[in-house]
Amino acid sequence: MADLLIQPSRGLHGAITTPGDKSLSHRAVMFAAIAEGTTEISGFLTAEDTLNTAKAVQQLGITVEGLGTDRMLVHGKGLDGLSEPAGVLDLGNSGTGMRLLAGLLAGQNFFSVLTGDQYLRKRPMARIVEPLRRMGSMIDGRSNGKLAPLAIRGGGAALKAVEFASPVASAQVKSALLLCGLYADGVTTVSEPHKSRDHTERMLRYFGADVAESGLSVSVRGRRPLTAGGPVVIPADISSAAFFMVAAAVVPGSDLLITNVGVNPTRTGIIDILLQMGADITLEKERDQAGEPVADVRIRHRPLKSVQISGGVVPRAIDEIPVLSVAAAYAAGTTVIRDAAELRVKESDRIATIAAELRKMGVQIKEHSDGMEITGGSALTGTRCESHGDHRIAMSLAVAGLAARGETTIAGKEWIDTSFPGFEGLLRKTAS
Ligand code: S3P
Image 1 (spheres, protein in one colour):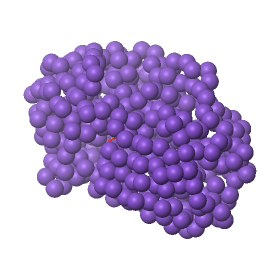
Image 2: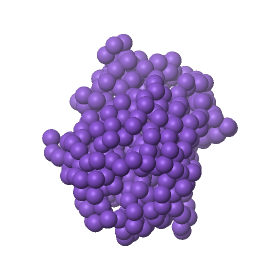
Image 3: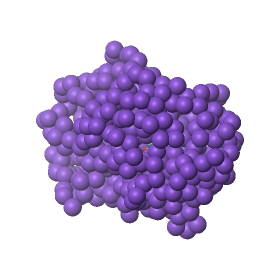
Image 4: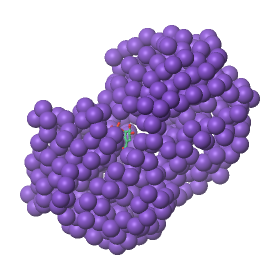
């Protein structure tokens, strides 16, 4: 395990771009594989998670040119063009890779096995396995299908379209069912308690699928071909930009521009929450790119105040709550986060891990089963921290260290490569 050493910063400055959006990168390579024709993808995230998905797509018989670079050509073979993989598909650390592929593979006529690393093999799979079984696929896994590895015999011609009300607001669950629904006769409908990210809906439409939305429900009509049309241009990941946004917000003297950031309204909870905390953020050059809104984000330091985070904004900021906890630690007053029990089943139990690590730096935190109360405003002290095998915990602690007293050491920096290779270099360049 390698250490990341962080010194206090005198301010973050300049114009930077963060790597391509992870959610969009997974989807682009999967959807292009089942579209008819060749799709050019640019801005693809060349991190471990998304490269594992692209390799899985290759194992399903699809030619991917440029793998390992951010510009790829995917030679799609249409809905029925995938072939049975000879080996196990290993999605590494990625919940999105595993759950979305499980949905796609549940629609096929063949057998496949999905596995992942020690962290992914602990994450809940029943949330997709049960509804996918209901659609007519046979899926087994450890603990009767609750945990990966998952063995999938797709439903093929026997698939049934379903109406499914998901108890959790999860784009991974929604997307898995919509992908399987592409193969079922009739209309598959998924509803959720709050709106989760809608990249699947937007991108499936971009590939010509018949997708309809009504309130918190999304439907797809099955057995309609997808077609490679325009190029897929992936913007910078707002979830990666979030580390730099919070860093610039909390380190005095900062003035930072992050260019080409995806600002899909189902992802911008981080901006709304920081604005509520009093941060100085402006969106510039707002534009549309391949069906997704994009902007440049400027952020300058300004003292922050505490905030309440609950309800519908939680899924819109779910991956940013660890770094928002860091913002809360530097904000005056007590920030209350509720309705966020999903954090307990991410790459780590993010309520337990961020609370434990920020406490080591001197922050007062009370844990709830579905959130935290973070009392901010006192100085943080740099110390030795753990990443807990979680990229976003490691990067959040790096941000905490930039505004702390003394040096912060984060053990396990290699986990950052699952989503943000180059994070350390970009931080060193930006935060003098
Ligand atoms: C993702 C959905 C979210 C998010 C994850 C990426 C996606 O997970 O936490 O990092 O790309 O669909 P859930 O849908 O499980 O909440």
